[in-house]
Image (tube, helix red, strand yellow):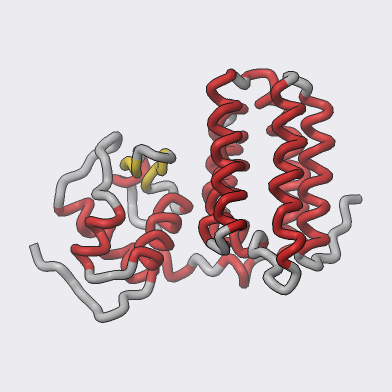
Length: 233
């Protein structure tokens, strides 16, 4: 197999290379994708670049990332390839539009999650929130954003609506852009962690209405932190 290497491959080119590698290895739905450290060594790429490429592949629906387990090929992998060069989210949607989508979608989704949530699910969400907090404390802001997004994505998974889960995964690139922390105001970084805590408390009581209120408050506070002129209606 011919491996294409660049000194500093950009994430979008690396997406294509990983797709090619998956095809050449004959990976099928359910198969595990090589770990990120192996991909970094194979393509001579940095771990952050590999991580960005993996997130893009997940957003395209070609792989499924499971925390602490790795990435797995999805049913969509064998379908006609997506032209990743056309995926310019920031040019297609404004921050306001994405926050309005999340305000409507996630306040509904969390009501479903409150009905279905198990103690194991609560532990998983708590672990993601604590991972975000630890990353904030250590100044690992990209890792904090990843844990933040995974917290919200896990709620959609718990809700049991695959369409909603896939919508959030699809728009992961722009959602994570809108979540970029306000580095100029580091004292505000812990707010999202505490807001997640309020969401978790409502979920622990299986109280969908209170959880929805907490989620809407969290999203509105996020727009304030990001200085987005959000109008909820």
